[in-house]
Length: 357
Image (cartoon, rainbow, N blue to C red; front, side):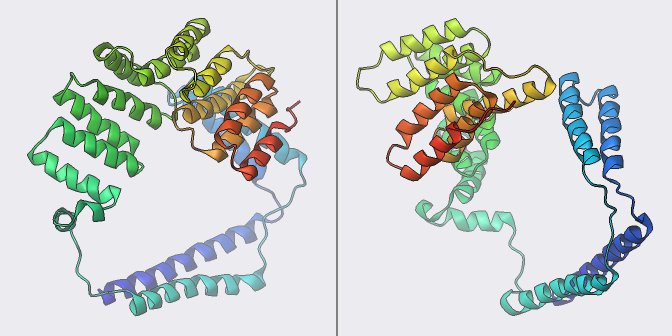
């Protein structure tokens, strides 16, 4: 093991030397020509090539060309400077690169365990299975559940696996586990609803067609589920049927008691669905920006405990000049973080951002 790591360290140093020497040679040959403009021109050519080969949609191609063109114009208007390198600094940089590899190897030999044998995953899972479940973190618990479900698949086990996968930050694996769960217990509305919410989380807050199907199935099995009704109403409004989505949200609000805290979120969703589109210029770039802001808003609907996300959303609506949506998002964020003066101050500052011209 020591021999291996020594060889690896020496190879790393040699590779760094080759990279730096080749970079120094290229810098010496480049003279005073700035290659930035050539890079952006090549990007425009590559974008068209990808579109012709069917690897990029027309809408995406237009948006990408707009961004690449903007950068090309900015580079053309800026001062031109060639890429140069100081010869006096090259030995210092090379020595620093070599020192990093040597110090890393030395540190590993001192504090590491070069002779420690490998621990296969199966052996670690067996150790976790013999440990108390309360001592395991989410990824370890997910690994244990995956092994157990191979022997004894059951819907409840897959539900627990989905929770562990979600806690591990893996919504795709959580959705996969829930698909197995609903296949084993298709009559359980709670599993269908969890699947829909998992798909929404994985899509950044967007109610995808698969999520809508799962929530619709949950609502068919147990009519009246507020969570499923809420997200289906959001999806209806987002798909273009604003009036229908608003009616559905108003019906949900009318079913809640006057003091129910969930009414605030529903009323905010109603205002956002009713708000007219802001004065954003037409074009591929503006459409791309609008999709990004819409995705952020939908993600915050599904996962609202994100102060930085709310600040970005308020600032985005302010930049776009959409005062109605800005005020609706600001009002909702104020209520959520009413006891946090620092966040409230940043929200107010974001709302005062000047709209783009």
